[in-house]
Image (cartoon, rainbow, N blue to C red; front, side, top):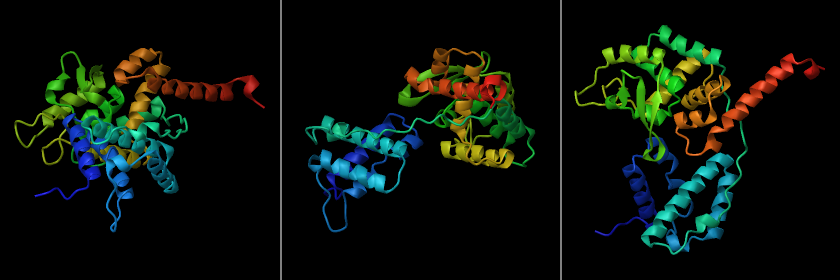
Length: 303
């Protein structure tokens, strides 16, 4: 039976399948979905164009449509990156003879300093999670989530993907599988160690073969979406700030290390950043903090 999907849809489905085989996280798969791109070039009364029929002009028109939807520059950049990867796959397979997406200029994103809570605010939040005053069903697991996010600077997908064999409990190291299947070793501290041991004593998997460290109420691996929901719940209930998310704790981890004198290269290794420039944004955060201290304390800053 012939495949009724358009060639563009078939290529997009192969692209997502390839990402899944490379162990891309569900978050990455959602972000790199090309549904909106394909829908733009499809209509109920017209046949979608062949991939080779989509050129630079058509791609610029699509970008204009995204701008009209009032999407942020960051979101548009991410969508364009996904389309470039899709066209790269089609070029490799011979479906197209050139990648027009490479010729489209990437919209500039505003440089924003990440909002980072202070060390006192972050520790107050984590300690409040450990106080277990909200009558949650799995307080030991929830505390471990916060201890590892703030204590190790993990991405939420890395946290959800941890297996029991990734833990070196005697030396307090975690093997972390990051982006692009890259692995790194991250140490964890005494508070995280106590939280880990307390949780593992209560961990009740649905099957003995379940290797996930963090499990949900059904005894199966906790998804990154489930972990996000847990962080958001505690942030809202304890801090009154629903905007705080798992990556906020990763930012706090890096910023507080830098503020206390950690080397930027070491922080790069701990975070699993491929480029030092990605890590350098935390320097901007620290400079912002220094300026605030100067404005408050230095006589020449006062009017």
